[in-house]
Each structure stands twice: as structure tokens, then as C-alpha cells.
Length: 88
Image (cartoon, rainbow, N blue to C red; front, side, top):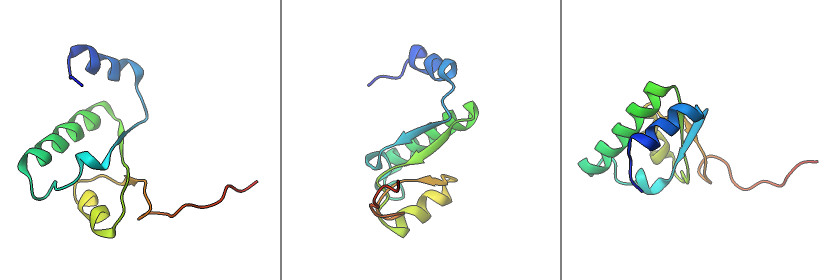
């Protein structure tokens, strides 16, 4: 995937309410400066465009707390809520 003016313009045009970010981009954020820089760049873009960021595949409270410290407050994953049956 490449980021270009086209993909950034598409974000502005589409005006999504949220973007989901996979756990692969969130792992080791506290231990790897390149991962932290990438996440900070994504947060800067989404914040400036008024787009919420949803962190997916969050499995532990420690992961959730690390993301809350980065002002990410929307999550999905078994650590948040396990699989539940659909209600009619």
C-alpha cells in the first residue's frame, strides 16, 4: 500500500466516520520507535480529518490501556467482549 495525494484526497472526500486499524500496526508501539511514529502519523491524520480510529484485535487490558494513553478510545476484540450470539 502506498500513501499518496490520491489516497489522502480520497479520505477527505469520503469523510468516513471511522477507520479501523489492525493490531499488527499496534503491537510493540511502546517498544519500537518506528511503530510509534507510524501510529502517531495515523493519529495526526485521523484527528485532523475528524475521523475516529478503531483499534481491532485487542485481547488484553494492557493493550487497551496502552491505546487509551494514546487517546484511542474505540476498540474491538475478545479482550473487550467475547463472541456472543445474535439476539432476534
